Image (cartoon, rainbow, N blue to C red):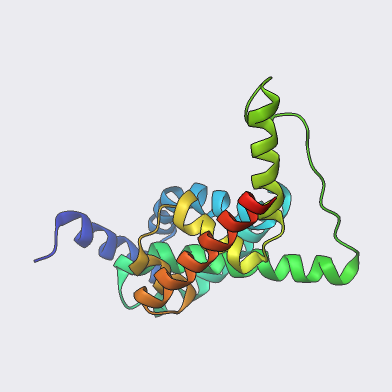
Length: 179
């Protein structure tokens, strides 16, 4: 039995796919912030992330009619945005050499150098990951995707997704303890 929320989402997706701009605006309002947060983590740059999300909405508007299960709209939208941000990063890398900058201001830990150094270690470890790995971590820990939503977004089985995430976290922990 479907709930009223599921029926409402299905109706909204169906209306938007049929060209209803108000229904599409509801979808944008519901998912835009989450898509942007995930893309900021992947891109490490708010401007690139926002541009990727805007491009993702254009794609979503064109392809919304192909969504078979409205319950999977959230991971579908986030995966479109992640793909767009990764594509932007590839283009940027081709145009110029990418330089990682560390901002000293706004670091976690305030005035405690011990906490700040841990934050720096984590930032360095995250910056060393490729965009696919940062995307996986962002979808899990920023967007809060469960393994089923993650598997939909990245195209693996739920168990394969959990294994990949587990290996990634193990690698990060090892890097943080070795560093």
